[in-house]
Structure formats: structure tokens, C-alpha cells
Image 1 (cartoon, rainbow, N blue to C red):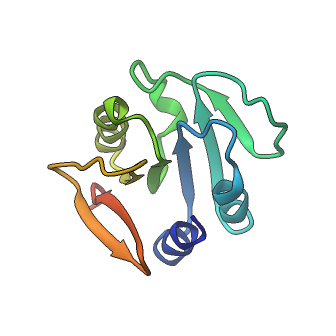
Image 2 (cartoon, rainbow, N blue to C red):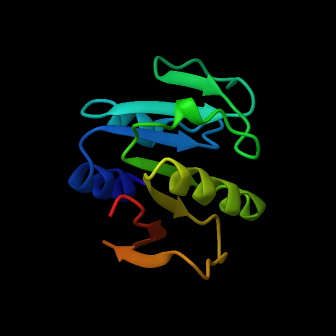
Length: 126
């Protein structure tokens, strides 16, 4: 996942939002050294974190959380949430990056193979 952090740091310089973060903060913590990072999930994390954390439901989102972001990303979210994550990014005109859990695929996003890591990207800021 460090490679995904590299990709984000090379392509974004402002606010990024990680959705469906769960209790895995490694990428967000690395990004927070240089970017404004907001972590979002539908329930409080079990692990303590110093990151900015907000509870929100991506199926019925509070769009003010996501406004002004350059990127909304998710690492291994459930396949059934892809639509909602991408929808939020389109509404707020932020790019979207989804790293699939396994062999899931998306018909809409652009498949990127970056330094051996694969993920989908939607460029909505253009």
C-alpha cells in the first residue's frame, strides 16, 4: 500500500479523503505528513488515531465532508460501495481512486498499474 501513498503524493497536494478506512491508517498517516487528510467510516475505529476522523455513511453522505477535496480514495472497500464512493467524488468534482480487495473490477474507472500496484482511477477534476 506504500505504492498507493507514493502515487497520491505525486499527483495531489491538497485535501484528500479516505472512505471506508476501518482500522487501517498506514496510508492515511503517511499522507497526513504532507496533505490534509480526512478519514471517513460509518463507525468509530477501534484503534486510536491522531488523524481527522469523521463518521459518515457513503450511501447517504454529508457532502460538506468531501467538498474541497482533490481526491476521494478507498483501499479494499466492499464492491457494493464502489458506486457510492464514485458518486460522491463526481458530485464534489474530486478524483477518485479505489484499490480493489481482490479481483473485483470496474467497467467505468481507468485501471492503473503503478509500480506493480493496481487500482482504478476516475478523473473528475478536469
